[in-house]
Length: 226
Image (cartoon, rainbow, N blue to C red; front, top):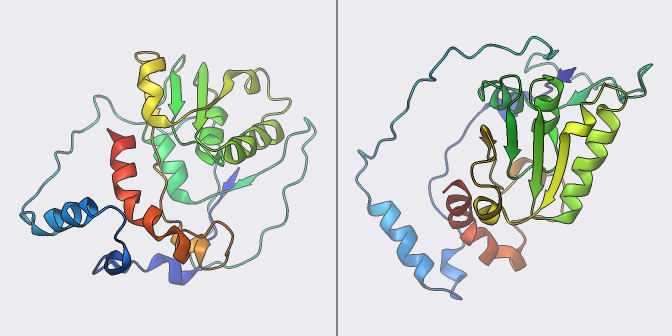
């Protein structure tokens, strides 16, 4: 079971008006030119959206429960079921919808390019549809978290845990090794984790010593998507 527990303030979207930090970033000047070109692009830029080839259906085996956005009730800690697996995993509704939108089918091979901490891969596994799920991440710490999630929530659920495999690679190198091996690919590129950064100083992308890394992040995201 999956729960969504979002505060009211998080439902309000405020678009970014400018890119901050460029005035102090001088290590690689070509990034200035790249961002300036984006700002000068024609505002009529559009993206072609293609409808799915077949209707997307909600996976019959996936049980999800959602809390209203205004419900701030604190959830209890997950508890072991009779099978030994934990009884629910908490994540945002968007993560569930991303997996549903894949239109998973029986015997699909699924690649999750940036899998840590593992929530979306877990949702995919609990549909009982993919034959194989390869969870990849470039950071060993995040990949260990994926392993912990799979061991905690898929324990005792038939052979589902055996369908999940781990890979420690830079996702941009995956096509060289796994080209043509997957029916579906999930690519949730790393972001600035703004919400987490508000409450956690550890690994905060907005720290002054990580300014260059933050400025380069859109280019990294583009490389991963390509």
